[in-house]
Length: 155
Image (cartoon, rainbow, N blue to C red):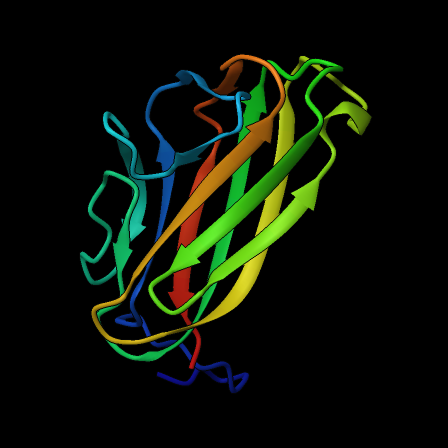
């Protein structure tokens, strides 16, 4: 529909927004990658327009197009020894990455928010998920429940 101001509203456009349902403790920090769909992952959906988010960390695109994917991963447990980090958005077509230096973050070992938004080309049936990699010591990184993950078909 188009409203009086000319704004277009396509209420059936595929998209979702979800929050991590419980904190995942000690998932990275030792040069391993935590994936949004790792075993035990469960999300609380705010909305899922076309029922394409599985509730366990993976969105499957129902149609080919460009999707705006937004993730804000919230985590804690960083130490000054953590030497490198990568935040990923994975699609079936390609991987998008954002490098960061954990030891340079202002609030080391407290709540850290790391947002990432990317317009991704996705084919029908392709999947979208995210991941977090932190290097150096032991698995000390906890992903908290304020982590949110969403995608919306934009064209």
